[in-house]
Image (tube, rainbow, N blue to C red):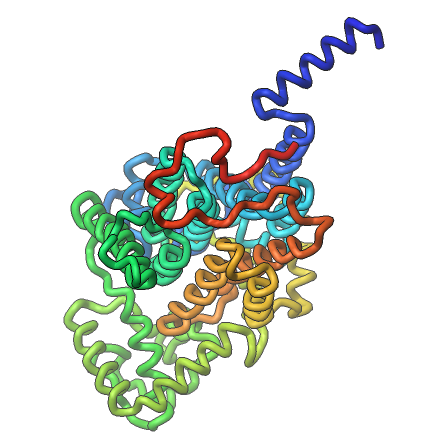
Length: 493
């Protein structure tokens, strides 16, 4: 190479480094882009479950109900976004969030490798290719986790405020996407929201109380704004989705006590406990609502009128208080089935095939697969793995607890958030769920893989040279100088 060419090449590399685009960083960005392109190509326009189809139909018709995620359905209808655009946005946010969480603690190339491993893991990639409230919640919560962790160690006031604004936006969408997001988001705010020394200053000697007040205030703001937006802008009709839980629990208690505890109108005339016993399986509640009949092609009514829901609720409350032992036993049995302890997860619940609008008589534009042969090859491979029954939610639960402890709960705020988020997500479902699909455990599995990757920071060859500093003291949060030397992290190429 001639001297002039070497000089030009050196100048180009220097310019790239000055703008933050060092060759190593460009290569890693290209790999992450390729990862996203592969998953997108395998699943475009994105698989959907009946829940998503229902929300899509509401968005297209402009007539909403509160069965799923009315705030998200309302935004979908307002922007009239094509389903493939929603899929690509969710996928991109998930990849970026996972990488941001890992790159704070791991060397850049290790973080890229772990991001790819988590996204392509056989028990997680199947739902990564879906469009739905589980994926929206996961993307928003994980991105919020990445931002709130950075805000916790950021000493520059303006940048920290910008990060916290991003946290609020992400957690708003998480709560809007899934109703059981309240517990994980609340826990994340409690363990990681930075509390300035000037806030609740009269409680300086009670840091836990100050943190509870600060986190509680932000959570109330988030929940309240989602509720106001839903009621004012979306105007959903009440459908009482809790009725499924009432019916599931009441059925289990009634069968255990051999007593017909249901109010009139829940089942077709002439149905007996013996008929119900044949149809009900505590390990497969979904079939109870959608796949059984009493010989006259009439299924259980899972969408009751308001007055019947009120009667069902009264019967449920009476049964729970009269037979608390059976209620607890029912919820424990369900939880063990959901975790895969009492048996494998239902087949095709780790790699769901997706649903079509025509099957459910819903008006929603879901294009055909963009690359059907690639999708089929990926699906066939994943289904061969799923048939081995290797993956159970309880395994990921163990990994989540052990991995977060190994990563360092005191030092790594992301480990604390992911541990609480994964546990409380399952806890919310355990108290109200009715089906044992792996979809309910998928978010916890992602959290488990993330903390397992974070635990690699214990290996010197995998840990960053410049890990994040300790969080600033409360009095420093409101008076940190805006200097370049106060950055929260170093930059590595």
